Amino acid sequence: MSSFFTSDGQNTADNKTIPVYIMRPDKLDDVYGSLSEFQANFVRATGFKAERMQVSKIPGENGEIAAILFGAGADKKDDLGPISLGQLSATLKSGLYRIKMAPEDWDSSLMAVGWGLGTYKFDNYLKDKNRPPSLDLSNLGNSDEIHSLVDATFLGRDLINIPSNDMGPVALEKAGRDLAEKHGASVKVIKGVDLLENNYPMIHAVGRAAHEAPRLVEIEWGDASHPRLAVLGKGITFDTGGVNIKSASSARLMKKDMGGAAHALALAHMIMANQLPYRLHVLLAIAENAVSAGAYRPGDILQSRIGKTVEIDNTDAEGRLVLGDALTKASEDNPDLMIDFATLTGAARVALGPSLPPFFCNHDDFVTPVVEHCAKVHDPVWHMPLWDPYFKMLSSPIADMKNAGGGFAGSVTAALFLKQFIGDTRWMHFDVYGWNPSSSAGRPAGGEVFAIRGLYNWLKTSPL
Image (cartoon, rainbow, N blue to C red; front, side, top):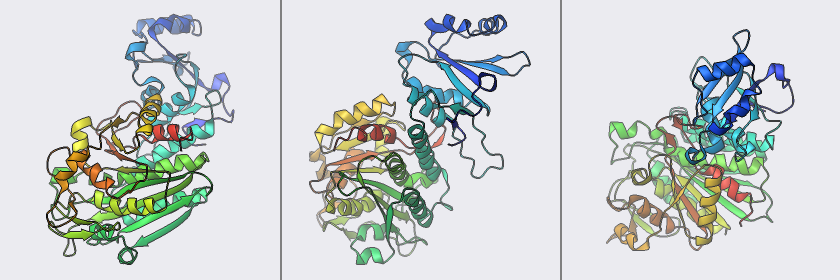
């Protein structure tokens, strides 16, 4: 069990744990009976009113922290629910804590997940390592599942936060191999010129200019009798923009352009750790979009695995190219559902901001359940239309299509481009940002994975 949780009963005696009381304003009086007169007076004197995310650290006789009060706020202001506990855990020192009181409508497992998410700190390159506060899980639900959800999120965050000099194509492949080995899954890798020989021309074209070869990593896990689920991720380990080179400000965060692959591995970790009944097929389309003599150019026409030709309108629209070949491969194996993740368009951020990812789906029966399951675990998504009339924005007079369509509806045209490579397969596409520009409850600033807890919650219901 990781250091931010304990569930084995060790050191859980009341005199060795710090109790945490979470309440709405109308329940504050109920807490006073658990406190000494001095402590109750302290709470009143410091102005604690159980407002949303308000914290009171109550001292004991020797000056140590004896109890924590955390405000849930009024019902109508409680948009984060139990996930807001991540705001508290981010402020606490190492030690052992136990939840003694919480709002009746707060799910106990989600409280634990929220706590865990708030303890994250990317300290790989820091001398002083994070020592997170530990939460006793013995009264909060399935500790193994809780741990796996937080651990998978941390995996995704770490992969995105690691800089490109240490997270190139080779390292990202290794991350996939390490996860596969952890869960007893098989791995297949095709890289370099072998991509051409095995008919992955767009993956090869995007990555051929880099010093580390492009590659397709495939992970297979699960019983062949179970529904086949393909999970794909864009793995552009750094995106210069190619010949259509990015500005300095735009390039600054492009270590996160492999965030789709990080999402795919994080969701796969949740599925495999909890033995969900799927035949899982993970595909990571990995390349660095570099600039050199071998770089692909605007105006080039690329072949694709599916047989359609693509005129390159902009070399900075490379993620959809590598995903196109990967989606074709996944669809050839007749999955019951394909889910892809990609840090694909700035247009999605303009439309919905950094923390509400749009998703596109060609199977209407899945849309409402996915939205509802994501909302239930406070991991929201927003459905966007696959508006076919806009595909004409990608028309080319000399190829089957272009890879970019100008300034209008950029996230929609990107999704329509991907749709050309899936055949009749049921499919979802998530255009994720992969980054928190600032910290909020359970979401520290930096690399982030979105929608995967919600998707895991939906997949647990065996919708396929």
